[in-house]
Length: 215
Image (cartoon, rainbow, N blue to C red; front, side, top):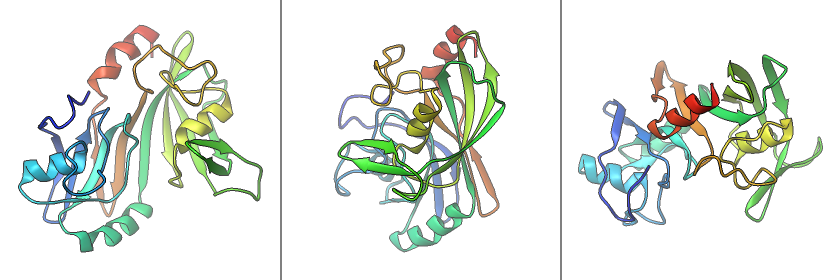
């Protein structure tokens, strides 16, 4: 987990080259800040660590861990966003319940209302598609792999609620909220783009949870 606000962190670099830098984002830290002087985000921490500013190619929710991509120059953002759109992003999720299926395609449009997102009927909202695959089954929970085909706000979290398998630790998209873990059990495991595949190891804070739930 991230430390106190403003504390300097040593981020784990997963990949580094002339243009691109990939980090293993810790949970509890925003991807980007309000500006380049906002210290409470991965963007500032990484720029401080490297000794020069960086720009985010995509975003992860504050409580989500895993692979996060940055470029060294602002002009490179659009090009890498295009490359990422043609690649793939796979997440690991620990969910409530044990799915009866092995693989599930969810094509359910989403609509953002204030701070919440909800599934809406076909023809309304923004297109949102996710593929879920069961990796491990436990007695009452499961570890899933989720592949994003679109990149909507809270897409995986809302689609899992839609399926009846909300995330462990989910405070917003579960009734009642889950207090089994301080954050939702969602990890950006793998990014593949432009001939590169970058993986982030399963996060330390979720390992005891995974063991306790038998997944």
